[in-house]
Image 1: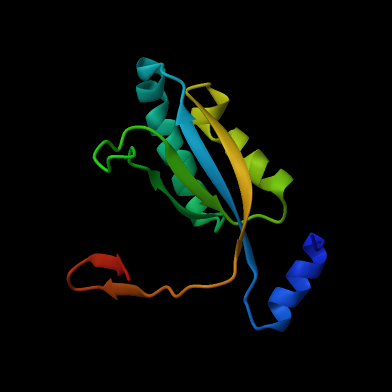
Image 2: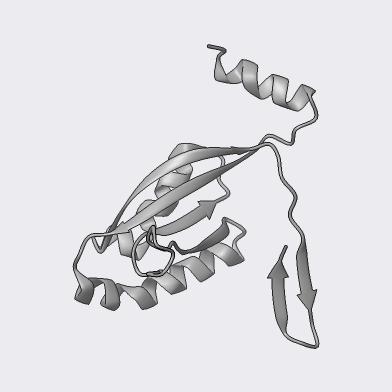
Length: 128
């Protein structure tokens, strides 16, 4: 199996962007009152991380049926290292208060296409 540094070099050589982001899967710990009490601070934290350019995307994940959106959450951070991304996740009030736990992974983005449409007069944004 090739070493990570060898793979990363070959991805760049073949023209892939090899963008590194950090994916946090956040899971509720079952304390609904704590979750509700922590939500405003969590949303403020996420907003501040977005303004600083450290939060790429975040939001709830559905259950396997695709119906229930009140379980796990996904947070994508832009960071210099896994350790720095872990610091961001640990500082999230949901995690620091114990309302949610998390695991974190480095995500290497090599392929795909993303289009962002901003309609100013309609006041909406769509991702295609």
